Image (cartoon, rainbow, N blue to C red; front, side):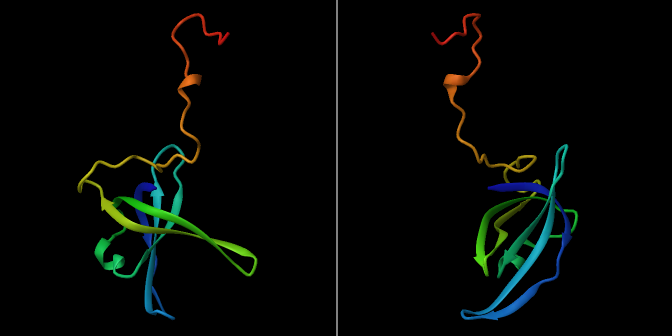
Length: 120
């Protein structure tokens, strides 16, 4: 899934010690474009923090994975990015959140141009 927007805030980096060693995480807030803009908190992990080099005000397209997990009968959701492209670098980006969560459109239900639309 891809989310396109402007970086409006970069949160402080968080580090910790886990069973696999030291980890690093930094989150940023992306505001989507459109009539009803949304703010999305997106996490970068490990060396991606240095690789992406984000700044407040950057127009970017973030390729993300959304994951939820349960802890003590409560659910927590995290949006993790694995690729960030700044506007004007590489491919042209969509103007808002992309990814269709519904079924693909059925051509059998598409409007017909003839006057006789009855299926029987």
